[in-house]
Length: 314
Ligand code: VAH
Image 1 (cartoon, rainbow, N blue to C red):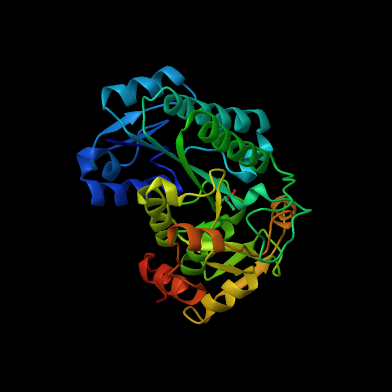
Image 2 (cartoon, rainbow, N blue to C red):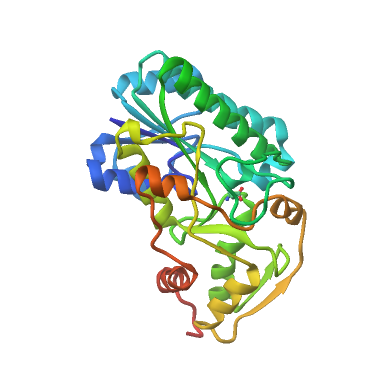
């Protein structure tokens, strides 16, 4: 059985749907700190679960005979700057709760999401390699970098089969994002369609690594389904699909919504974005477990525009 912790989140909700498609609804238990929407609640088993409560996580794994856990609950970069200790506790206590079940042999396999946020201002900005200087300057980035070290430690010391991906900014239309710095790349579509204009909280030339959600979900399922000996790096894998600036995505949207206008009013999230790489080198994921992306900026924008509900002036 599979348990998704944080199943109502931006990644968790699409991941849960994909896993239920692959393994059957009853094989995938969705859980989150509060109940999900109607679709989520009716699609298969659901449990209200606080990922920081070790006994509750253990009880649900025992009750459903869970073998694989996808730990998708976390506080993202922008919100974590507002609530540092809450972010640290949620991001770390939840990870230890799941890693310890692996160490005790109560579950067999763990997926844990890292992020390009593990890189910091001193990291080489372009085509950032998997192994390089990492001095994250955000609470979220520090928690992800530390989490990677613990995943590697639990694998090397206790043989825990934990696998991890450093997600770039993820773009999806099914769910709204939750407190990330890359959220502009989702909000811009909703405003372009609903209002014909968008005020971006990052500067126009802020290049960031990005990926369409379908690619991220495919990578997550793939890394968990390859034989363990293919996973050469038990801290986390760089993953990349594209890199673009607010100006570039706005230009691409204008090809579909010609009257769309963008304005720029950078806020506190600009300094977070400035501390991250502009683009990522993911050659190890491609070599070790066959990663390849399918969506670039042009076809991602086409997908997003095609799926988002249209407004009157179309
Ligand atoms: C965030 N979407 O903005 C997340 C992600 C690389 C960005 O970690 O915090």
